[in-house]
Length: 193
Image (cartoon, rainbow, N blue to C red; front, side):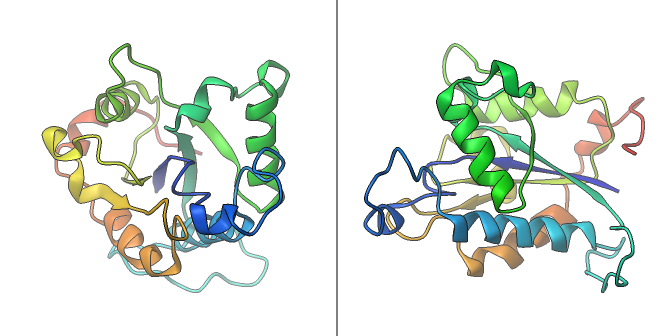
């Protein structure tokens, strides 16, 4: 099975409480603890079975599912799949995530009107692989309910620790319970390997 995590950065991977602990925001753009919590969500998602429960991975065994992180943040402007095409901020983000075990796979497009829910839906439509579930991690309400996406949105907090430990289980439940219409987006798409 194949899952997507749509990831904002500010308010998810960093927060005011984190910034109060570092000398330089520009040198420490993300909170390693928040990135590790996203990594934990990825690892649990890799072990989801068809009933939405996680199973224990055998030591040394391969994960059951694939999980890709899709950048939705304004940081995506400087990030690129090809590291040579990343600007300084994009490289910093990519490196900070990678150092803590999270690999950014791709990014959503950027609409002229800043329609983040529409960008997520467009990504799902154009994504070449079948998607079995997704979750959106974002601190801001971009009118997710207008697009019927609010049930798959975990609202984090920029004031408090961004993506928190208590948010992992609800996010996992959202990943395991995709919307009915996702099947329509999957018509004719190949399985992710």
